[in-house]
Image 1 (tube, each protein chain N blue to C red):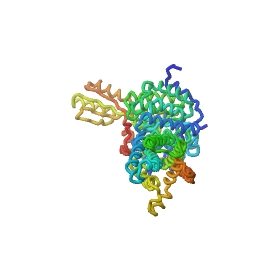
Image 2: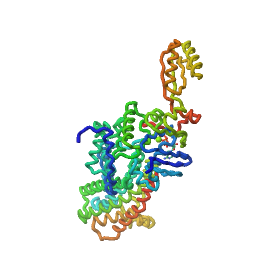
Image 3: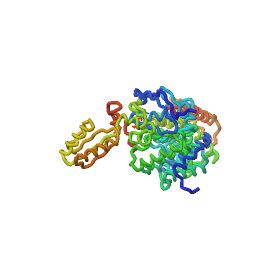
Image 4: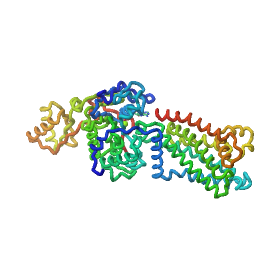
Length: 269
Length: 322
Ligand SMILES: Nc1ncnc2c1ncn2[C@@H]1O[C@H](COP(=O)(O)OP(=O)(O)OP(=O)(O)O)[C@@H](O)[C@H]1O
Ligand SMILES: [Mg+2]
């Protein structure tokens, strides 16, 4: 078909196909997010530079002081900083959405007869891919620096998988905030306020048993601690405790609570 | 089947303390262009966003293409398309990608979506810019891709929010042609505008909105009958000629023209264009030397002056499409 079309001709096509399924619509939004990365690859800075800096900094700056040797500390700390870095990066999900939603194009999405959450689910799926990139960079760099996972490659895969599940769920909080908070700066402030204490006051850097009692109590109920312990367990194949299940429960709870809340604010913006 | 595309009763939208839309009732017959005319901040966008299921009205109810706005929002979405006032496509993506993307969202297969995108790009003369990011488009191209994205599947009702604000006359005419083609093919178009001329050119029925209220409604003929066709301005070489012309105008038209001595010109409001021609003929017959003359459409301010007795205060942000 190479005949020139005129506006009149393109209008005669009145058949309306069946609306896409929830999965198709989400995949289409994910495709949009991927295209955007292709145009603005700088978007990937946060998932590449961040992990590298964190890993180098903690291994060489604190390694010697905390564990006596950097190699030993790396084995302990890498799962921790992996969780910390990826949790930190989830914050960008909200920031990107906040910028995106300011533009009028969301009005068009919302006036289409599609499963409305797909707009957000698609974006979050691609963000999960970004978390995967960050994880891969860290594990690879760690390996070069001397990190040796005791449960081997499969352990790493399982550890990263549970981390991705948690990050995807956590992203819904930032997505919700991205919709309600007006300015990007305010959003950044709020996100940091939560993420810094949660990641630092956890089992990321040191064994909680070395901490004073009052601090231990907080660290023990901190969700990040559970995630770090679960990832560590999987990567190093230490005795399986309930941490993995707890992380799965936390993730489901996050989605069940913040998914509908996010959609509520999205619809009533 | 309802004969109305939009039937709204006493719609109200309140933001904080402000009644952005304050009791609007509309009946828009199917198959026409309805022009929603009003100054900045009048409540045009807010009304459209309610009718397109994006905002819940605080009061009132409406049927769009026969479906209840709140009870049957999904069915409404099936019949409408919205081209928002600002960026209504993804600026980071190319024009073609945007159209394929929307095509997928309305349910086309990948192949169908691509084919449809190419058809539309061709029809809207955007083939050369197909692979360029939309943020690098000119204003006129932007508006064309915005509208193309809205008719990936032909909607029964298309909302166009200020489709020509900020466009040059050529691009504006292109948009007008698109709107005419749409209506010819049976789409009902609900457009907002700040320009009387645009409503005059395109709309079969015009609603004038100010501060959230519909203050007048009618065909452009009906509105003009109450407003007048515009003004005639005549320039002269010297003040003597101006004085002579003034006397003629006063005696023949029983109306005092506005005199501008600095420009050596006079301006008079006229009801119909034929009268203006007559006035010029009259001046020539009595040997008054004219330098030049011009006609102008009544401005929106004049419309409001006539309808409400005061000029709208231009509050509520700017409308420029940057
Ligand atoms: N989301 C919002 N929150 C608060 N106030 C709003 C919101 N949207 C619109 N308003 C206010 O409602 C009033 C009507 O705005 P609206 O955008 O509907 O006007 P408009 O006729 O489209 O104007 P313009 O020609 O500038 O586009 C304005 O005073 C505006 O400030
Ligand atoms: Mg507006």
